[in-house]
Image (cartoon, rainbow, N blue to C red; front, side, top):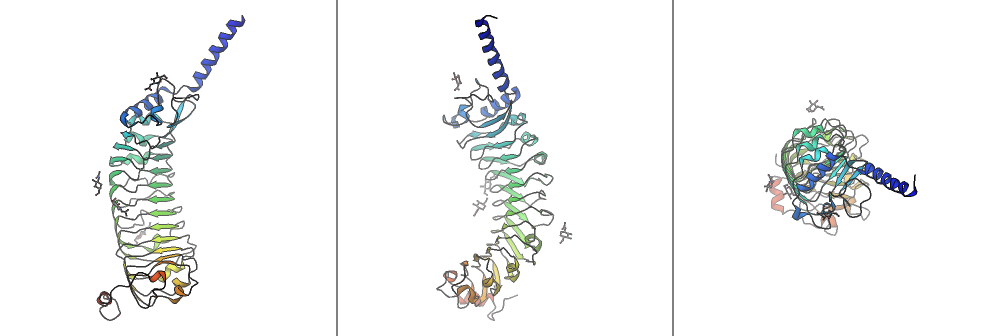
Length: 381
Ligand SMILES: *[C@@H]1O[C@H](CO)[C@@H](O)[C@H](O)[C@H]1NC(C)=O
Ligand SMILES: *[C@@H]1O[C@H](CO)[C@@H](O)[C@H](O)[C@H]1NC(C)=O
Ligand SMILES: *[C@@H]1O[C@H](CO)[C@@H](O)[C@H](O)[C@H]1NC(C)=O
Ligand SMILES: *[C@@H]1O[C@H](CO)[C@@H](O)[C@H](O)[C@H]1NC(C)=O
């Protein structure tokens, strides 16, 4: 071979091999084109990831300088991640996204996507993370969501989704589920058994806390159900779920609470404030070894604050204000050795020392307490 011919051959060989290594599967390219065209071009700023999606280049080839700078990742010739920047993209999510069958992650959070979540999305076999948080998706979530075979993190919070909560109970992979700040209604469905974090706060959920929903969730650590319309009793088994650390049930319509003695509880924080809970303040909360923060503020609790609370060394925050608690608060809170902050104000307590921050908010007027206790220091039945 002559030297010039050899050189040309080498150049040809190089260009062929680099192109072959980086050429995106054509159905992935058409899906990316459809995804970009479903977004209003006036909401794609020049500095954004999507502005750099220029299909004169190949999306997955690895030598980009000006095109496909960000917003996606590939493995060989397949797109594996869609991770958009928070540029304010508005439009819909193209149903052709389901052609990207090797997708592991979709994160288009903090944009202005609207319309229905495309049903085809839920057929993606390898999807582990779906984050649609803080967009304007509306409509219901179709039952086919239960076909997501690999899903681990599902965050569709802060949208305008309505209807009943999606049933994900058959998933064995789902560990983090956030459906908060939507317009979901109805009861809490059966939850998937390997769930670690559940957030369904600020919806319009109703019904009872049912042991069918929470059956054998042995990994469940964090439960956020605040700001809904749940009713009835907060049952004792709820606090005994073995891995539980944090529970927020505030701002619902619970009317009673049952506290059972725990064995090896990891419970650190309980907020059941702003409900309609009647009855005495249970001493059994103090048997939860790790309990550090407890709020039962703005309920309808009666009777005294048990002595044991002031002797509980793990306790740091105790909010009991806005109830009808009576008697003298335990002296241990005021001996200068207590680490507890919080509030005992707006109750019917006697001699709550105003020098203590716990008592800085004043007690209820005597007339209101007398009326609540029928003038006899005992609750009206
Ligand atoms: C895409 O890139 C080509 C080649 O660099 C350029 O001519 C074209 O204007 C680009 N298109 C857009 C929409 O930026
Ligand atoms: C969601 O609920 C809010 C507050 O009630 C309401 O203003 C809004 O119109 C509802 N959105 C949908 C999509 O139902
Ligand atoms: C409670 O939920 C409603 C409806 O979603 C919402 O508008 C409101 O901001 C929420 N309040 C809090 C304190 O989160
Ligand atoms: C749920 O609670 C009901 C009523 O308390 C009880 O009969 C049932 O056995 C419980 N089911 C489970 C799965 O724990």
